[in-house]
Amino acid sequence: MEFLITLAVAMVAGLMMSRLAKKVSLPAVTAYLVAGLILGPFVIGRIGLPGLGFPSLEGMEAYSLVTQAALGFIAFTIGNEFRISQLKSMGKQAIVIGILQAVITTVVVDIALVALHFVKPDLISIPVAITLGAIAAATAPAATLMVVRQYKADGPLTKLLLLVVAIDDAVGLVLFSVSFGIARAMEQGSASMASIVLEPIIEIVLSLILGALMGVLLNWVERFFHSRSKRLSISVAFVLLTVGLSMIKFQIGGIHCGFSLLLVCMMTGTVFCNICDFSEELMERVESWSVPLNILFFVISGAELDLKILGKPLILMVGVIYILFRSLGKCSGSYISCKMTNCGEKITKHLGITLLPQAGVALGMALTAGELMGGDLVRNVVLFAVLVYELVGPVMTKNALIKAGEIQLDARTSARTPEAMNKPGKEHKL
Image (cartoon, rainbow, N blue to C red; front, side, top):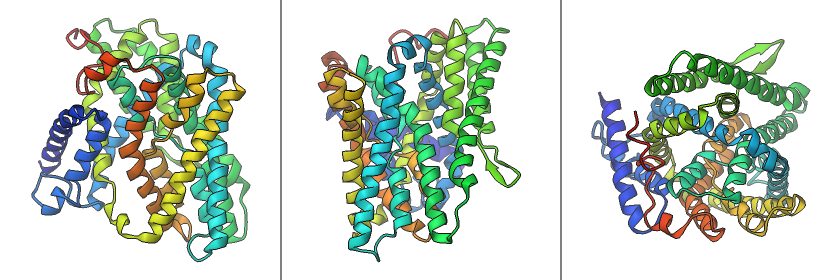
């Protein structure tokens, strides 16, 4: 009972906050995160009234299924951007930019934090520095997608952005696995090629295979139904099934094998949208259905932000350096890679800003990095960065898209928050 009441209160609070945010021209994503902070364990949740807010950070684990499901739907809809027609026009640019900007960001943050180690060796170790550098490559697809949806952004920058954000997850996974493997080897005095190279490659390959199989299977099952509502129901069921299967972990000959939820669901969406002739309309319906789930995702994410780190000066110092140099890496990396691939002036100038949001993927990496001796520092620095990026990032993404001319004036002034459906007239068809 308490769980359901809390979710209902969270959703209503997020929606009400989005109305206030609209009056000051803030993205709805920021409003949902602020609503989560207010309902979290440091404000209303601290009162301890059952069902009213989230009383503790430890208790947030109970809501992980909601956030995992929401990420699955977000990744599934991002897969819709990888249509063959889109890849023919922007595929090469997206791949080069997705890889290069992530690598440059990691190198820039590595240099800054390793330099900090030599200045203050008791504050941060080299293994922690290179681990944070790899985490810096990760970008949050959820916040970016929600801003694009809310303001109906459209144009070359928006299309390229969604492709790059999707590719960034695979690149970030490889960079983190390699860096984290090296960091553990430095602490333990021995290196395992399986953990450094083999395991991340296996995870990516397995994720792509599972996603492709689920996409083909979804297309086959959809053919048995002709009703719009039943096709939507099948799509929702398959995304939930795919999220569940992506949580499976196993070992083969001592090698840890698993799946990336984002990669699996993105691949499912990609394969499905390219082989199904009615996928475009169905994707719109899935997006509309998942709106309440996305609201809960961001409200819960806001409640999970740990405000206690604001009272730790040393963590704040490392966090500020991490944020500054990650931002420098994303912007410079995007600029360089855009120049190399002959992107337009507006894309070259504004893409880096839109890649700044960081959230769930980075937090998952930070949790894994807890095995290091400085694991607590990694987690706290990433938590601080997420707090800043999630509150400021959506606003910066919106402003960059406006400057690029891909959010029109009428869309800004009358933009519907994501609790409304994505396109006029679509919501009443079922």
